[in-house]
Image 1 (cartoon, rainbow, N blue to C red):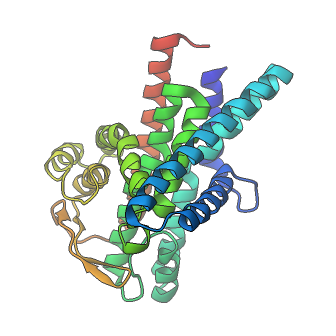
Image 2 (spheres, rainbow, N blue to C red; image 1 turned 120 degrees about the horizontal axis):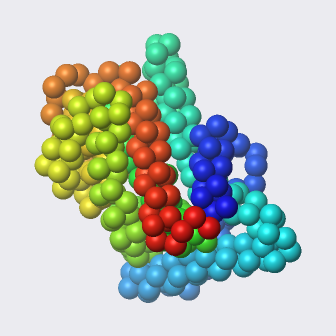
Amino acid sequence: MTLLAWCLAWALDFVIGDPQHWPHPVRWMGNLISTVQRVVRRLCRSDRALRLGGGVMWLVVVGLTYGVAWGVLALAAKIHPWLGWGVEVWMIFTVLAGRCLARSAQDVERPLREGDIAESRRKLSWIVGRDTSQLQPEQINRAVVETVAENTVDGIIAPLFFLLLGGAPLAMAYKAVNTLDSMVGYKHEKYRAIGMVSARLDDVANFIPARLSWLFISAAAWVCRFDAGRALRIGWRDRRNHSSPNCAWPEAAVAGALGIRLGGPNDYFGERVEKPWIGDARRAIEIDDISRTIRLMWVSSTLALLLFMAARVWLVGIA
């Protein structure tokens, strides 16, 4: 039943994703983070105090998320096994973000194909932190490809990895870790102190999944008839070409698979950030690379699901 729950949750994400008006735990996590952050800022004034308060915030949010998820799942199973199973499916479904990621990328791609660059820039600004107001089509394509590649890890592969390690409650706790990083893990002045713990522990949580993504994306490149060999080589060669210890792994694998170059200079919060290049420009990046990267995302996540299911069977059996 556990493996069936995994498959059904993954299928639901593939088909319907995150309906906009449905209740979603990530929104609840976001509200909790905002509330705790206000309390921390009210009590902590110095940078040192904010770093300590940020650590307490991380413990409260992640600990509460795990505890509530475990408690709800246990209570539902006690009421009726089928109810417990249904709650498990729902929890797993909510931590997966493949369809949402694909839809967001396609929302940028669609107006770009129609020649509406202004609308494409506007939609892109919803999913990236960089300044999109002056981006040209090639830069928009690159930003979308980078976003899909990077979020293949924290949107699908990492939740599945923690699902294998500790079931739905641990996958939910990982989602809290990731949400904390996305809300307060920025490097500019406002969040540098309070978000330090969240940013670093998100790096820790994604350390293994990011490196697994290099292998999964390379295998997906072979399945999709892209350049799997270059995905492996570029993934390894350029794995350190990013300020994050994790982001370059999936981005470099995608760049190698498609024969394109990612990274480079971008503007964040009014500041020019010079990033190293990832991959080799064997050809110019094009709009079709967005759909190719989405395909790599789906195939690599399917391979991750199958491998983690096999690992589950090997470790504890089918139950």
